[in-house]
Image 1 (cartoon, rainbow, N blue to C red):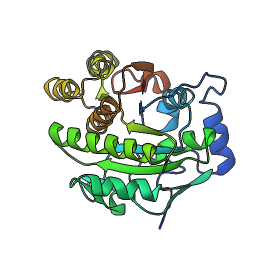
Image 2: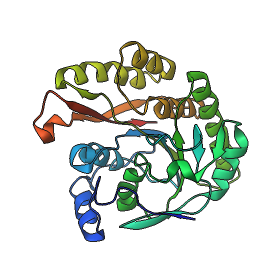
Image 3: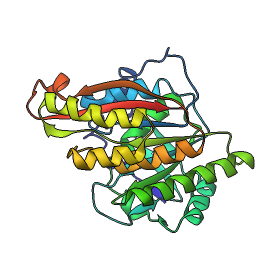
Image 4: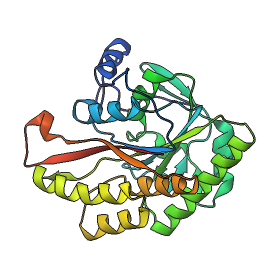
Length: 272
């Protein structure tokens, strides 16, 4: 099964040459690459969040497999949905799914379900791929969406992902894996409120505290759409031995739109 691009021409340029130019303008090719276990990247239209995503992807030492975890905005499909077979196509490349890794993940947790329907129109993972393709066309992907979950379920899935990654590396099925959590931060608040509230969430990520992140987002009513994917990624990275988290870049849509009364926040982070 080949998943066709759902938001080409909307979130990013819809033609090959235009998209290549757009991504090239947003990445920093000369940045020193570092080995990471995970990352947080935004998923808005490239004119708003592309420079944050580009800054993150410019720093990553490329693995052989990327596990992409994003929020399910459409409401379609299973709560934890993996597309386990096929390809993802967009204007500049077609990525193969790592079917072996995906199959192991489905078997690793009763929560993870094989469900391509959940991915059909979801943009949060698709918009990551043009940046990945700029730096590596050899990497394989495993796409996962999260619709809703408790923090305990995020822990269970994150731990299961880490154990599968460890097993795959030990068995030399993959050389290495990076887990990308897709999330925007505060939505449709003032720039001042977004920066204050987003900093509360960012501090929890910097402290590698997924439970604290989940709690502060709920208690402070932070409209961070990918809190669950980020929590899953953090639990996985902690299990894999992560010791350091870095904020690469933060901005809000106001820097593009000029509207400081209704902004969306974007944070890019590395976990290693």
